Image (cartoon, rainbow, N blue to C red; front, side):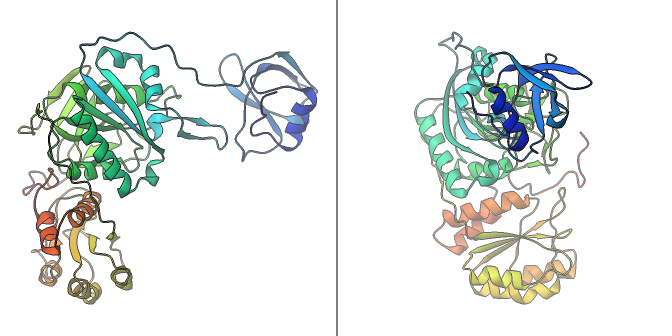
Length: 443
């Protein structure tokens, strides 16, 4: 008998008495209706009063055990499980692409323990359930991690960067990294700095809706990522996701300029203070940004994968307590990225602690809470005071990118002065020194 996953109390006792199992076709009779369907698992935090069956039309319904007059098994069944289709044949002349899986919704299925989605499919499973991939590339699939993206750490960024180096050395013409969407912007920025001279496209991709949902964007996003990784004329680190709500266009975003701006829309990712570098329509890549680094044939490039995690991202707000900065200093941090208001301001009540941070050798840099636009710390007295203290203005850099860049700069420098110099330099397209538009671009 298969485990009666998620059932407890009176519903579990009834099912045990009848010796039915998950996956069995059962008939349930109530005073008003007779139902026939497949017995489904439940998530563990549900009540104990309902039995869930899947009807022939595909819908699941819950039936209150207090209304059940009789239950009988119509036929034995199997517990629902994922069975990948057989491997299709491949063209050996296609470009080689490595898919490195780190988890996320694109690699998820329903978790009946909690009712949520969880990382369950391996990268090779993804390959099998998206057979169209075989038309475009020879795929080598590898699971590096299987984690929720909120569990991503700097040490994992290092491992991903070193894995990319290994794949490039082994002759792959493109690399796709599947990743949860919530922190994908942080990882794309981290890899942009760690792999700033990579000779091929490295494409991060995720999905807003898991692959077992009819509205899933997983398959199209993955196909698009493989097409960009294998065919794009440019090199570097990018994010490929839906450009709109329909399935006709995917956007290719620069890894240091991309942000998730919606919790659940398929087009949640947008380029900020920049346009997407390219669009993918069908199988055609339309380059938008000129002078991108070209794809190269060489396999040797420097990886700088070290990150010093003793950096804090601090959002200023009314009634902000400057002792928060003091706590960061006392904890031995080496840098602070301020997310200031407007053009790059924090209260004068913070000055004393910022002076202390400077005296203790911390790097302090300024970004803006505004999503679009740039810091301009010479306009108002507050900004000029902060510049005089030694706060570094970070132009139009995203706060998340600035945090990652400071970790990287400190992790790959021999001195604070060298790290400060790196923060001011444009390493991977993270800084535009001039803004053509000072407002959010219209899609």
